[in-house]
Length: 489
Image (cartoon, rainbow, N blue to C red):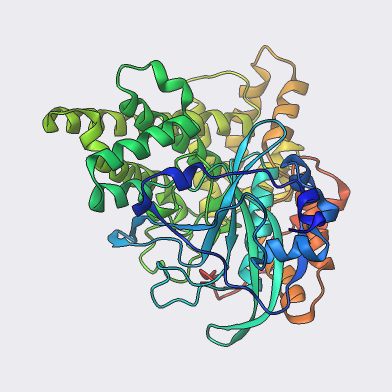
Protein backbone atom coordinates (compact mmCIF):
# COMPACT_ATOMS: atom_id res chain seq x y z
CA UNK A 1 0.00 0.00 0.00
CA UNK A 2 1.53 3.27 -1.08
CA UNK A 3 1.53 6.49 0.83
CA UNK A 4 -0.40 8.22 -1.96
CA UNK A 5 -3.39 5.88 -1.60
CA UNK A 6 -3.52 6.34 2.16
CA UNK A 7 -3.57 10.09 1.69
CA UNK A 8 -6.36 9.94 -0.87
CA UNK A 9 -8.95 9.76 1.90
CA UNK A 10 -10.69 6.49 1.19
CA UNK A 11 -12.71 5.51 4.25
CA UNK A 12 -14.58 2.35 3.37
CA UNK A 13 -17.19 0.30 5.13
CA UNK A 14 -18.77 -2.75 3.51
CA UNK A 15 -22.21 -3.20 5.02
CA UNK A 16 -23.64 -4.70 1.81
CA UNK A 17 -21.06 -7.48 2.00
CA UNK A 18 -22.57 -8.49 5.34
CA UNK A 19 -25.90 -9.37 3.70
CA UNK A 20 -26.69 -12.96 2.62
CA UNK A 21 -24.02 -14.17 0.21
CA UNK A 22 -26.56 -14.97 -2.50
CA UNK A 23 -26.94 -11.22 -3.02
CA UNK A 24 -23.46 -10.68 -4.43
CA UNK A 25 -20.26 -12.20 -5.76
CA UNK A 26 -16.91 -11.03 -4.41
CA UNK A 27 -14.29 -10.41 -7.08
CA UNK A 28 -11.74 -7.81 -8.09
CA UNK A 29 -11.92 -5.60 -11.17
CA UNK A 30 -10.10 -6.79 -14.27
CA UNK A 31 -6.95 -4.64 -14.68
CA UNK A 32 -6.68 -2.43 -17.76
CA UNK A 33 -3.68 -1.78 -19.96
CA UNK A 34 -3.02 1.98 -19.83
CA UNK A 35 -5.38 3.94 -17.56
CA UNK A 36 -5.58 7.68 -18.12
CA UNK A 37 -7.74 10.10 -16.16
CA UNK A 38 -10.15 11.95 -18.43
CA UNK A 39 -12.57 13.65 -16.04
CA UNK A 40 -12.47 14.22 -12.29
CA UNK A 41 -15.31 15.81 -10.32
CA UNK A 42 -13.28 17.77 -7.79
CA UNK A 43 -16.22 19.30 -5.84
CA UNK A 44 -17.73 15.83 -5.40
CA UNK A 45 -14.36 14.42 -4.39
CA UNK A 46 -14.09 17.06 -1.67
CA UNK A 47 -17.61 16.33 -0.41
CA UNK A 48 -16.68 12.65 -0.15
CA UNK A 49 -13.61 13.50 1.90
CA UNK A 50 -11.20 12.62 -0.91
CA UNK A 51 -8.02 14.39 -1.92
CA UNK A 52 -8.49 15.40 -5.56
CA UNK A 53 -4.77 15.87 -6.08
CA UNK A 54 -4.03 12.35 -4.86
CA UNK A 55 -6.77 10.94 -7.10
CA UNK A 56 -4.90 12.35 -10.10
CA UNK A 57 -1.53 10.72 -9.41
CA UNK A 58 -0.66 7.26 -10.71
CA UNK A 59 -1.88 5.40 -7.64
CA UNK A 60 -5.12 7.38 -7.51
CA UNK A 61 -5.87 6.73 -11.17
CA UNK A 62 -5.02 3.05 -10.67
CA UNK A 63 -7.85 2.84 -8.11
CA UNK A 64 -10.32 4.58 -10.43
CA UNK A 65 -9.33 2.16 -13.18
CA UNK A 66 -9.68 -0.95 -11.02
CA UNK A 67 -5.96 -1.74 -11.22
CA UNK A 68 -5.44 -1.21 -7.49
CA UNK A 69 -7.77 -1.99 -4.59
CA UNK A 70 -7.69 0.75 -1.94
CA UNK A 71 -7.37 -0.16 1.71
CA UNK A 72 -10.68 -1.17 3.26
CA UNK A 73 -12.46 -1.85 -0.05
CA UNK A 74 -14.15 -5.18 -0.68
CA UNK A 75 -15.15 -5.30 -4.37
CA UNK A 76 -18.30 -7.18 -5.27
CA UNK A 77 -20.89 -7.48 -8.03
CA UNK A 78 -24.49 -7.25 -6.88
CA UNK A 79 -27.13 -9.76 -7.90
CA UNK A 80 -30.62 -8.58 -8.80
CA UNK A 81 -33.45 -9.38 -11.16
CA UNK A 82 -35.87 -7.16 -13.03
CA UNK A 83 -38.65 -6.66 -15.51
CA UNK A 84 -37.02 -5.44 -18.71
CA UNK A 85 -39.69 -3.99 -21.00
CA UNK A 86 -42.24 -5.98 -19.00
CA UNK A 87 -40.42 -9.34 -19.05
CA UNK A 88 -38.91 -10.78 -15.87
CA UNK A 89 -35.33 -12.00 -16.00
CA UNK A 90 -32.29 -12.68 -13.84
CA UNK A 91 -29.78 -9.82 -14.04
CA UNK A 92 -26.97 -8.47 -11.85
CA UNK A 93 -23.94 -6.23 -12.21
CA UNK A 94 -22.61 -7.51 -15.51
CA UNK A 95 -19.96 -4.82 -15.87
CA UNK A 96 -19.90 -2.97 -12.55
CA UNK A 97 -18.27 -3.59 -9.21
CA UNK A 98 -19.03 -1.99 -5.88
CA UNK A 99 -15.70 -1.09 -4.26
CA UNK A 100 -17.40 -0.34 -0.96
CA UNK A 101 -19.19 2.42 0.89
CA UNK A 102 -17.32 5.66 1.46
CA UNK A 103 -18.02 7.22 4.85
CA UNK A 104 -17.68 10.99 4.42
CA UNK A 105 -16.36 13.46 7.03
CA UNK A 106 -20.03 14.25 7.79
CA UNK A 107 -20.76 10.60 8.47
CA UNK A 108 -22.73 10.07 5.25
CA UNK A 109 -22.51 6.77 3.41
CA UNK A 110 -22.15 6.48 -0.38
CA UNK A 111 -21.59 3.53 -2.68
CA UNK A 112 -18.46 3.81 -4.82
CA UNK A 113 -18.95 1.74 -7.96
CA UNK A 114 -16.70 1.16 -10.96
CA UNK A 115 -18.76 0.82 -14.14
CA UNK A 116 -16.99 -1.00 -16.96
CA UNK A 117 -14.65 -2.86 -14.61
CA UNK A 118 -14.72 -6.24 -16.37
CA UNK A 119 -16.69 -9.46 -16.51
CA UNK A 120 -18.65 -10.75 -13.52
CA UNK A 121 -20.73 -13.88 -12.90
CA UNK A 122 -23.73 -11.83 -14.15
CA UNK A 123 -22.21 -10.70 -17.46
CA UNK A 124 -23.95 -13.37 -19.51
CA UNK A 125 -22.50 -12.86 -23.00
CA UNK A 126 -21.18 -9.38 -22.27
CA UNK A 127 -17.53 -8.38 -22.04
CA UNK A 128 -17.98 -6.40 -18.82
CA UNK A 129 -16.51 -3.29 -20.38
CA UNK A 130 -17.84 0.14 -21.28
CA UNK A 131 -17.13 2.60 -24.07
CA UNK A 132 -15.80 6.11 -23.49
CA UNK A 133 -18.76 7.87 -25.12
CA UNK A 134 -21.53 6.40 -22.91
CA UNK A 135 -19.46 6.91 -19.76
CA UNK A 136 -18.88 10.57 -20.62
CA UNK A 137 -22.59 10.84 -21.41
CA UNK A 138 -23.50 9.56 -17.94
CA UNK A 139 -21.05 12.03 -16.43
CA UNK A 140 -22.70 14.95 -18.26
CA UNK A 141 -26.34 13.99 -17.66
CA UNK A 142 -25.96 12.92 -14.03
CA UNK A 143 -24.13 16.12 -13.11
CA UNK A 144 -26.72 18.19 -14.98
CA UNK A 145 -29.48 16.45 -13.04
CA UNK A 146 -27.69 17.18 -9.79
CA UNK A 147 -27.41 20.86 -10.72
CA UNK A 148 -31.14 20.91 -11.51
CA UNK A 149 -31.80 19.74 -7.95
CA UNK A 150 -33.05 16.28 -8.95
CA UNK A 151 -31.96 13.31 -6.80
CA UNK A 152 -29.41 11.33 -8.78
CA UNK A 153 -26.39 9.13 -8.69
CA UNK A 154 -23.30 11.18 -9.50
CA UNK A 155 -20.09 10.76 -11.44
CA UNK A 156 -16.75 11.08 -9.68
CA UNK A 157 -14.41 10.24 -12.56
CA UNK A 158 -13.97 8.81 -16.02
CA UNK A 159 -10.79 6.91 -16.84
CA UNK A 160 -9.79 5.81 -20.34
CA UNK A 161 -8.54 2.23 -20.26
CA UNK A 162 -6.16 2.32 -23.22
CA UNK A 163 -8.05 -0.66 -24.63
CA UNK A 164 -10.62 -1.04 -27.39
CA UNK A 165 -14.00 -2.68 -26.97
CA UNK A 166 -16.10 -4.11 -29.76
CA UNK A 167 -19.68 -3.04 -30.31
CA UNK A 168 -20.73 -2.35 -33.91
CA UNK A 169 -17.14 -1.24 -34.32
CA UNK A 170 -14.01 -0.80 -32.23
CA UNK A 171 -14.48 1.89 -29.56
CA UNK A 172 -12.18 3.32 -26.91
CA UNK A 173 -12.83 1.76 -23.51
CA UNK A 174 -13.47 3.63 -20.27
CA UNK A 175 -14.47 3.16 -16.63
CA UNK A 176 -16.87 5.47 -14.79
CA UNK A 177 -16.73 5.88 -11.02
CA UNK A 178 -20.34 6.22 -9.92
CA UNK A 179 -21.41 7.53 -6.52
CA UNK A 180 -24.84 6.57 -5.15
CA UNK A 181 -26.79 6.67 -1.91
CA UNK A 182 -26.98 2.94 -2.58
CA UNK A 183 -27.56 0.56 -5.46
CA UNK A 184 -30.56 -1.12 -3.82
CA UNK A 185 -33.23 -1.54 -6.49
CA UNK A 186 -36.73 -2.82 -6.96
CA UNK A 187 -34.95 -5.65 -8.79
CA UNK A 188 -32.94 -6.49 -5.67
CA UNK A 189 -36.15 -7.34 -3.84
CA UNK A 190 -37.44 -9.21 -6.88
CA UNK A 191 -34.31 -11.35 -6.90
CA UNK A 192 -34.65 -12.31 -3.24
CA UNK A 193 -38.40 -12.91 -3.52
CA UNK A 194 -37.79 -15.31 -6.41
CA UNK A 195 -34.63 -17.13 -5.32
CA UNK A 196 -34.08 -16.33 -1.64
CA UNK A 197 -35.73 -17.33 1.61
CA UNK A 198 -38.27 -15.37 3.60
CA UNK A 199 -35.54 -14.61 6.11
CA UNK A 200 -33.32 -13.28 3.32
CA UNK A 201 -36.16 -10.99 2.27
CA UNK A 202 -36.59 -9.76 5.83
CA UNK A 203 -32.85 -9.18 6.16
CA UNK A 204 -32.80 -7.15 2.94
CA UNK A 205 -35.79 -5.09 4.04
CA UNK A 206 -34.24 -4.43 7.45
CA UNK A 207 -31.02 -3.33 5.74
CA UNK A 208 -32.92 -0.99 3.41
CA UNK A 209 -34.80 0.52 6.34
CA UNK A 210 -31.61 1.05 8.31
CA UNK A 211 -29.80 2.59 5.37
CA UNK A 212 -32.50 4.85 3.92
CA UNK A 213 -35.49 5.03 6.28
CA UNK A 214 -34.23 4.79 9.88
CA UNK A 215 -37.15 6.93 11.06
CA UNK A 216 -39.46 3.94 10.44
CA UNK A 217 -38.04 2.04 13.42
CA UNK A 218 -40.97 2.82 15.68
CA UNK A 219 -43.69 2.02 13.15
CA UNK A 220 -46.13 -0.80 13.85
CA UNK A 221 -45.68 -2.28 10.35
CA UNK A 222 -42.13 -1.31 9.40
CA UNK A 223 -42.24 -3.08 6.05
CA UNK A 224 -45.44 -1.36 4.96
CA UNK A 225 -43.79 1.91 5.95
CA UNK A 226 -40.80 0.98 3.79
CA UNK A 227 -43.04 0.38 0.80
CA UNK A 228 -44.92 3.64 1.32
CA UNK A 229 -41.74 5.66 1.76
CA UNK A 230 -40.28 4.28 -1.47
CA UNK A 231 -43.55 5.17 -3.21
CA UNK A 232 -43.37 8.72 -1.84
CA UNK A 233 -39.81 9.23 -3.03
CA UNK A 234 -40.54 7.86 -6.48
CA UNK A 235 -43.65 10.03 -6.86
CA UNK A 236 -41.55 13.11 -6.08
CA UNK A 237 -38.71 12.00 -8.34
CA UNK A 238 -40.83 11.23 -11.41
CA UNK A 239 -42.63 14.57 -11.01
CA UNK A 240 -39.25 16.29 -11.10
CA UNK A 241 -38.36 14.39 -14.27
CA UNK A 242 -41.58 15.51 -15.93
CA UNK A 243 -41.12 19.12 -14.89
CA UNK A 244 -37.78 19.44 -16.72
CA UNK A 245 -38.68 17.22 -19.68
CA UNK A 246 -36.31 14.40 -18.77
CA UNK A 247 -36.89 11.00 -20.37
CA UNK A 248 -35.09 8.11 -18.71
CA UNK A 249 -35.51 5.77 -21.63
CA UNK A 250 -35.22 2.42 -19.85
CA UNK A 251 -37.43 2.37 -16.75
CA UNK A 252 -36.98 -1.33 -16.06
CA UNK A 253 -37.50 -2.39 -12.45
CA UNK A 254 -33.77 -2.94 -12.04
CA UNK A 255 -33.30 0.76 -12.82
CA UNK A 256 -35.53 2.02 -10.00
CA UNK A 257 -33.45 2.83 -6.92
CA UNK A 258 -35.13 2.49 -3.54
CA UNK A 259 -33.26 5.58 -2.32
CA UNK A 260 -35.27 7.74 -4.73
CA UNK A 261 -32.28 8.66 -6.89
CA UNK A 262 -32.20 8.63 -10.68
CA UNK A 263 -29.96 5.75 -11.69
CA UNK A 264 -28.53 4.26 -14.88
CA UNK A 265 -28.15 6.89 -17.59
CA UNK A 266 -28.33 4.75 -20.70
CA UNK A 267 -30.62 5.89 -23.51
CA UNK A 268 -31.82 9.00 -21.68
CA UNK A 269 -32.32 12.51 -23.06
CA UNK A 270 -34.18 15.77 -22.53
CA UNK A 271 -37.21 16.70 -24.60
CA UNK A 272 -36.98 19.65 -27.01
CA UNK A 273 -40.42 20.20 -28.59
CA UNK A 274 -43.17 19.23 -26.15
CA UNK A 275 -44.78 15.92 -27.04
CA UNK A 276 -45.94 13.35 -24.45
CA UNK A 277 -45.17 10.57 -26.93
CA UNK A 278 -41.48 11.47 -27.18
CA UNK A 279 -39.19 8.44 -27.15
CA UNK A 280 -35.42 8.60 -27.57
CA UNK A 281 -34.32 5.02 -26.89
CA UNK A 282 -33.50 3.03 -30.01
CA UNK A 283 -34.82 -0.15 -28.39
CA UNK A 284 -38.16 1.27 -27.17
CA UNK A 285 -40.03 0.60 -30.40
CA UNK A 286 -43.44 0.46 -28.68
CA UNK A 287 -43.02 3.65 -26.66
CA UNK A 288 -43.34 1.86 -23.32
CA UNK A 289 -41.03 4.39 -21.68
CA UNK A 290 -42.19 7.52 -23.53
CA UNK A 291 -42.24 10.81 -21.62
CA UNK A 292 -45.98 10.67 -20.94
CA UNK A 293 -45.79 7.04 -19.81
CA UNK A 294 -43.19 7.58 -17.09
CA UNK A 295 -45.66 8.14 -14.21
CA UNK A 296 -47.79 5.02 -14.87
CA UNK A 297 -44.66 2.94 -15.52
CA UNK A 298 -43.27 4.06 -12.16
CA UNK A 299 -46.50 2.88 -10.52
CA UNK A 300 -46.22 -0.44 -12.38
CA UNK A 301 -42.64 -0.89 -11.17
CA UNK A 302 -43.67 -0.11 -7.60
CA UNK A 303 -46.42 -2.72 -7.85
CA UNK A 304 -43.69 -5.26 -8.64
CA UNK A 305 -41.86 -4.15 -5.48
CA UNK A 306 -45.06 -4.59 -3.49
CA UNK A 307 -45.49 -8.11 -4.89
CA UNK A 308 -41.96 -9.01 -3.84
CA UNK A 309 -42.63 -7.69 -0.33
CA UNK A 310 -45.98 -9.43 0.23
CA UNK A 311 -44.60 -12.03 2.71
CA UNK A 312 -43.39 -9.17 4.91
CA UNK A 313 -46.53 -7.03 4.82
CA UNK A 314 -48.84 -9.49 6.60
CA UNK A 315 -48.92 -13.19 7.47
CA UNK A 316 -52.33 -13.46 5.81
CA UNK A 317 -51.81 -13.30 2.04
CA UNK A 318 -55.18 -11.68 1.33
CA UNK A 319 -54.54 -8.92 3.83
CA UNK A 320 -50.99 -8.47 2.52
CA UNK A 321 -52.35 -7.99 -1.01
CA UNK A 322 -54.87 -5.44 0.24
CA UNK A 323 -52.18 -3.48 2.09
CA UNK A 324 -50.00 -3.50 -1.02
CA UNK A 325 -52.83 -2.36 -3.29
CA UNK A 326 -53.77 0.45 -0.93
CA UNK A 327 -50.18 1.65 -0.82
CA UNK A 328 -49.71 1.54 -4.61
CA UNK A 329 -53.00 3.37 -5.14
CA UNK A 330 -51.49 6.36 -3.34
CA UNK A 331 -48.86 6.90 -6.03
CA UNK A 332 -51.05 8.66 -8.59
CA UNK A 333 -52.28 11.31 -6.17
CA UNK A 334 -48.82 11.81 -4.67
CA UNK A 335 -47.35 12.30 -8.15
CA UNK A 336 -50.16 14.63 -9.19
CA UNK A 337 -49.65 16.77 -6.08
CA UNK A 338 -45.91 17.12 -6.70
CA UNK A 339 -46.39 17.78 -10.40
CA UNK A 340 -49.10 20.40 -9.89
CA UNK A 341 -47.00 22.18 -7.28
CA UNK A 342 -44.05 22.19 -9.66
CA UNK A 343 -46.12 23.44 -12.60
CA UNK A 344 -47.60 26.20 -10.48
CA UNK A 345 -44.07 27.25 -9.59
CA UNK A 346 -43.07 27.22 -13.27
CA UNK A 347 -45.97 29.60 -13.96
CA UNK A 348 -45.25 31.84 -10.97
CA UNK A 349 -48.39 30.86 -9.05
CA UNK A 350 -47.78 31.22 -5.34
CA UNK A 351 -51.12 29.85 -4.14
CA UNK A 352 -53.63 27.25 -5.28
CA UNK A 353 -56.79 27.98 -7.27
CA UNK A 354 -59.26 25.51 -8.81
CA UNK A 355 -58.64 26.77 -12.35
CA UNK A 356 -54.89 26.12 -12.21
CA UNK A 357 -55.06 22.61 -13.59
CA UNK A 358 -56.96 23.69 -16.71
CA UNK A 359 -54.56 26.63 -17.14
CA UNK A 360 -51.63 24.20 -17.10
CA UNK A 361 -53.31 21.64 -19.36
CA UNK A 362 -54.30 24.29 -21.92
CA UNK A 363 -50.71 25.57 -22.14
CA UNK A 364 -49.32 22.07 -22.63
CA UNK A 365 -51.95 21.32 -25.28
CA UNK A 366 -50.89 24.43 -27.21
CA UNK A 367 -47.24 23.54 -26.86
CA UNK A 368 -47.96 20.09 -28.26
CA UNK A 369 -50.06 21.44 -31.12
CA UNK A 370 -47.47 23.98 -32.24
CA UNK A 371 -44.38 21.92 -31.33
CA UNK A 372 -43.18 24.56 -28.91
CA UNK A 373 -39.86 23.97 -27.20
CA UNK A 374 -40.61 22.82 -23.65
CA UNK A 375 -37.73 24.48 -21.78
CA UNK A 376 -37.63 27.69 -23.80
CA UNK A 377 -41.39 28.28 -23.64
CA UNK A 378 -41.27 28.44 -19.86
CA UNK A 379 -38.06 30.43 -20.08
CA UNK A 380 -39.79 33.00 -22.33
CA UNK A 381 -42.74 33.26 -19.95
CA UNK A 382 -40.34 33.73 -17.04
CA UNK A 383 -38.92 36.88 -18.61
CA UNK A 384 -42.21 38.13 -20.10
CA UNK A 385 -40.98 37.53 -23.64
CA UNK A 386 -43.80 35.47 -25.19
CA UNK A 387 -42.68 36.71 -28.60
CA UNK A 388 -39.76 34.29 -28.34
CA UNK A 389 -42.11 31.30 -28.59
CA UNK A 390 -43.95 29.85 -31.59
CA UNK A 391 -47.18 30.26 -29.64
CA UNK A 392 -47.29 34.03 -30.05
CA UNK A 393 -49.91 35.21 -32.50
CA UNK A 394 -52.16 32.19 -32.16
CA UNK A 395 -55.68 32.90 -30.89
CA UNK A 396 -55.41 30.22 -28.22
CA UNK A 397 -52.25 31.70 -26.75
CA UNK A 398 -53.49 35.28 -26.63
CA UNK A 399 -56.55 34.15 -24.69
CA UNK A 400 -54.48 31.89 -22.43
CA UNK A 401 -51.88 34.60 -21.77
CA UNK A 402 -54.56 37.06 -20.63
CA UNK A 403 -56.00 34.50 -18.20
CA UNK A 404 -52.53 33.66 -16.87
CA UNK A 405 -51.60 37.30 -16.33
CA UNK A 406 -54.86 37.93 -14.48
CA UNK A 407 -54.27 34.86 -12.33
CA UNK A 408 -50.86 36.22 -11.34
CA UNK A 409 -51.98 39.80 -10.67
CA UNK A 410 -54.87 38.54 -8.50
CA UNK A 411 -52.36 37.03 -6.07
CA UNK A 412 -51.78 38.91 -2.83
CA UNK A 413 -48.01 38.54 -3.20
CA UNK A 414 -46.11 41.12 -5.29
CA UNK A 415 -45.33 40.34 -8.92
CA UNK A 416 -41.63 40.32 -8.07
CA UNK A 417 -42.23 37.19 -5.97
CA UNK A 418 -43.91 35.51 -8.92
CA UNK A 419 -41.00 36.40 -11.19
CA UNK A 420 -38.46 35.06 -8.72
CA UNK A 421 -40.37 31.82 -8.28
CA UNK A 422 -40.34 31.31 -12.04
CA UNK A 423 -36.61 32.07 -12.28
CA UNK A 424 -35.95 29.45 -9.61
CA UNK A 425 -38.23 26.87 -11.26
CA UNK A 426 -37.47 27.22 -14.97
CA UNK A 427 -33.93 26.37 -16.01
CA UNK A 428 -32.19 28.51 -18.58
CA UNK A 429 -30.35 25.48 -19.82
CA UNK A 430 -30.67 21.71 -20.03
CA UNK A 431 -28.21 19.26 -21.58
CA UNK A 432 -29.55 19.66 -25.11
CA UNK A 433 -29.13 16.47 -27.07
CA UNK A 434 -27.26 18.09 -29.95
CA UNK A 435 -24.89 19.80 -27.51
CA UNK A 436 -24.21 16.56 -25.67
CA UNK A 437 -23.50 14.80 -28.96
CA UNK A 438 -21.22 17.65 -30.02
CA UNK A 439 -19.23 17.29 -26.81
CA UNK A 440 -19.01 13.51 -27.08
CA UNK A 441 -17.94 13.62 -30.71
CA UNK A 442 -15.13 16.05 -29.94
CA UNK A 443 -13.99 13.97 -26.98
CA UNK A 444 -14.18 10.50 -28.51
CA UNK A 445 -13.21 11.25 -32.10
CA UNK A 446 -10.75 14.11 -31.63
CA UNK A 447 -9.55 13.75 -28.05
CA UNK A 448 -10.80 17.29 -27.41
CA UNK A 449 -12.43 17.51 -23.97
CA UNK A 450 -12.68 21.30 -23.94
CA UNK A 451 -16.15 21.20 -25.55
CA UNK A 452 -17.44 18.93 -22.80
CA UNK A 453 -15.88 21.05 -20.07
CA UNK A 454 -17.50 24.21 -21.43
CA UNK A 455 -20.85 22.44 -21.52
CA UNK A 456 -20.43 21.20 -17.96
CA UNK A 457 -19.58 24.72 -16.77
CA UNK A 458 -22.75 26.08 -18.34
CA UNK A 459 -24.89 23.25 -16.92
CA UNK A 460 -23.53 23.69 -13.40
CA UNK A 461 -25.85 26.66 -12.66
CA UNK A 462 -29.02 26.05 -14.69
CA UNK A 463 -31.05 28.71 -12.88
CA UNK A 464 -28.45 31.46 -13.20
CA UNK A 465 -29.90 32.75 -16.50
CA UNK A 466 -26.60 34.29 -17.63
CA UNK A 467 -25.65 35.59 -21.06
CA UNK A 468 -22.97 32.90 -21.24
CA UNK A 469 -25.70 30.24 -21.22
CA UNK A 470 -27.48 31.65 -24.27
CA UNK A 471 -25.55 29.64 -26.85
CA UNK A 472 -26.40 26.40 -25.04
CA UNK A 473 -30.11 27.23 -24.74
CA UNK A 474 -30.98 27.12 -28.44
CA UNK A 475 -32.86 24.03 -29.63
CA UNK A 476 -31.47 22.02 -32.54
CA UNK A 477 -32.32 22.78 -36.13
CA UNK A 478 -35.26 20.88 -37.54
CA UNK A 479 -34.41 17.40 -38.72
CA UNK A 480 -36.52 14.79 -40.48
CA UNK A 481 -34.79 11.99 -38.58
CA UNK A 482 -35.78 11.76 -34.90
CA UNK A 483 -33.01 11.84 -32.30
CA UNK A 484 -32.12 8.38 -30.98
CA UNK A 485 -30.03 7.26 -28.02
CA UNK A 486 -28.48 3.88 -27.31
CA UNK A 487 -27.78 1.86 -24.17
CA UNK A 488 -24.05 1.84 -24.83
CA UNK A 489 -23.59 -1.61 -23.34
